[in-house]
Length: 340
Image (cartoon, rainbow, N blue to C red; front, side, top):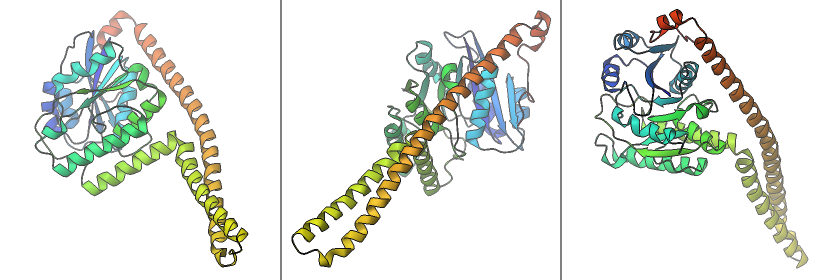
C-alpha cells in the first residue's frame, strides 16, 4: 500500500518548508509514503527548497496554469508513480499534517474512496464572519448538487483512492474542490467527511482574493457542473414550469372566450404562445443535452479504463527493470519527470 502526499505550489518558498517539515514519513497501515510537489510555474526558490527538503518527486508546469490544472497534473503523476492513495494538502500549512492518518483511514477500511477534511469553521479565528457564512452556504449548495453529506466542500485537504482518482476529471479552471465532489457524487463514488484541525494562518488565501469574486466564480462552477451532470433537470425542469405557465394563460383565455369576454385579452394569447414555445424549446434542449451527457459518460468511462491501463503498464515496466537499475532509481528526485 503506497500513499503519495501531493502539494500544489506557486511561489511557496516562504511556507513550503514549514509544510514539508510537518508531513509524516510513515503512516499506520501503509507500506510506503512519498511526497510529490507540483510546481505551477513558480518564479522563486520553491523547487530548490523542495529538493533540499527531500521531496521524492517534483512535477512542473512551464507556466502558471492555475490550481485546478495543477491538481489534476499532480493526480496523474501520483497514479503514474503507483499511488494506491493520494493525499492532497496545501503548501501554506493551513491543515494539520497529523490528521492525514484520519483522512486515509476510511479508505484503508473500505468505507469511502474519497475523504474530505472538514475544518472547524466556527473556531477559525482569522476568518471573518462573512467568509464563514459563505463557506457554509457553499457547502450546502454542493451537498444538494452532489447528493453527498460533505461538511466542508471547499476544503483542499483530502484523500482519494486510486480507483476514484482514475475516474475524476477537472474541467473548471478556477478550482477542483467543488467539481470533484459533485462529480464523485454523481458517479457513485463513496465520499465522506472527517473532522480535521487547522494551523495558524501564514499568508492570506490566494483563491479568495475578494468575497464577491469568490462567490461569483464558485456559483458559476456549481451551475456549470450541475448543467454538465444533470442536463435534463437543468433545462427541462425550468422548461416544464414555463410551459405550464403558458398553458395556464391559454386556459384562462379560452375560459374567458367561452364566457364571451375574450376580445380584450388577446395579450394573454401572445404571452401564452411565447411561454409555450420557450418551454418546449427548453425541454427539447434538455433532451438533447441528456443524450449528449450519456455519450460523455461513455467517453469518460473509456478514458478512465485507458488511464488505468496506462498506469498499470507503467508499473509493470518499472517492476521488470533489472534489480540494479531499480535500486538506483529508488527514492530519486525527479524535478523534470513531468513537465507541461
